[in-house]
Every structure is written in structure tokens, then in C-alpha cells.
Length: 357
Image (tube, rainbow, N blue to C red):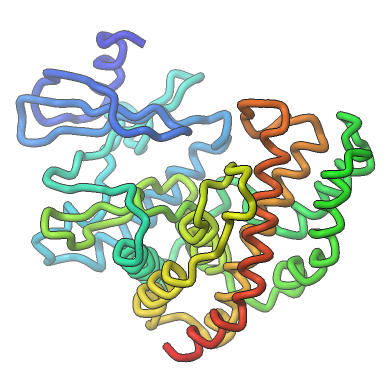
């Protein structure tokens, strides 16, 4: 879309000042994000919400509106409140926090000035991430409104297992006979019941979780202090396993998730310990003993779940994840299966560390 079109969309919201420039912002893979500069006191973030993935935009924005309003109430009187919680503008015509032309959906938030995010994954930033996401969950532990699932069954291991079996039965791409597939199934299927147990038993309470916990989804001030968590599209009810396990799945792997050198895959205990320490500190006000006890399980569950998802897509003919070469999903599966095996070996160490906190 040209600048004039983007300007017209941005002006559906009550901006302070006239627009002087619109430029791309960040490197997100889901939404189109732009920085809107003005000659007024504020600049803004204009985003196109990807309604192909988030099909219920009304629910998505309801979740975000309720969460940000709740956090803002808790921070009332804090002089940095506008840096510690995102501010979304109401559409001029409808008063809703998004605007649509019937096909595309857009929203505008106030740009947080003098704030920074980082891609670095090391123990120091992992501790900050654990504390930030833990405190974020703690802020929302007593939210009175009912929030919904923006992506239903997003982290439902029992569903992912069922999808794998369906793909195996259909064998749409004729890949079940490949020895690499058989080896992966032999490695993964014996753990299926154990990995599905938490979801099937329903013993853990549902919390409001971020569900996309990455270091680059945290804003810091110039001195390195945590300001707020951003990118709230996947904010929804889930188990605390989601934020804990999903962060470690990527952060604690010694290599990228599609690195074919599985002999180099290892689960980093230094990242686990740093993140766990921050997370336990952040969730101390609400985390129950059974939730705390299951955190090492979460660190094993998420690489297992992702291995299952990659393998399901590979067997089904690569219809979900984008691939760069024909065996990409197979390599991803091998990588995540290796990470799962490494995490399982270190699970006693994780359990001992969690018990010590």
C-alpha cells in the first residue's frame, strides 16, 4: 500500500499532530508494522492485523483491551505508566481499538519513546525475560474479564498428537516408508502418553499467558530496566507451561531450530537456570506448588510438541510451515527431537534447581 493509503488508515484514529513520515518498523513475521511519525507530541505504531491467522479480530482486541486496561489500573499513579503498558487508540467512528474496511484490519498504538528491545539470548537477558513474563502473568492473575483463545488449542499436546496420527494414516506425501521418518516415530511415539498427560488430566489451572515469549518481545529503558511486554496477539488463557516451555525451546537450544547438525544440539542449563530464577521471582504471588513442580516438564514438552508438529507437516506434504528445501521440515523435526532428548536427560537437574528456588 502506498503512503497516501497508509496515511488515510492511520487518520481513522485520533492522532496528536500531523503525519510527517511512515516507515517500516521491526521484523515481525505475522503482522505488517509501521512507525508513524508526527509533528505532535507522540509518534505511533500502525499495524495490519493478520486476520488469516487471527480470524477473530474482535476477540483478539477484546483480550488486549482488557489486559492493558487491567495493568493500567494496577499502575495508576506510576509516572512511567505510559511506558509500562501499551496504549491503543480508539477508532474515530466506532470507538473500537481497531479499524476495518471489511477485508483488512488495522490498529494504532502509541510508540514508546526511548525504549529498546534486543535479540540477544544469554543468561542475563534470559533472567530478565523470565522476570518480565512472570510479572506480566502476575499482573493478569486476577483479571475480572473473561478472555478467549485467539488461536484455539494453540498449545494442546493431545491435539497435536492426534494430528500426527491422522497424518500417518493418510500418508499424503508418501513419506511414511522413509527410514528417517520411521526413526523419528520410534524416538517420539513412546513418549506420547507422558507428554499428553497434563492436557488430558486437566490438573493445572488456566492462566492468562503471553504465549509468544521471546527476549525481543520485551521493552527496556536506556539503563536496561524492564518496561513492558509487547506483541500481545497471542495473549490468551493457557497453562503457565506455555510461556515457560516455549521460551526455553528456542532460547536454550545451542543451535537454531533448523540446524541439521543434531550432534551440536544441547539444552543449555545456564539459560534454563537464569530464566527459571526470573520467572519464579515474577510469579511468586500466584504460582501454585503443582505449577512450579511442572516447570521442568514444560522445558521438555515444548521441543517434543514442536517436533511432532514439524513431523506432522512433513508427512502431510509441507502444507503449514514455509520450507526452503524439500527436507526442511524433516531436519527441523530431527533438531527438535534431539533437543527433547537432551532436555529429558537434564530433567533431574532442572527439578533439583526448581526445588532450590
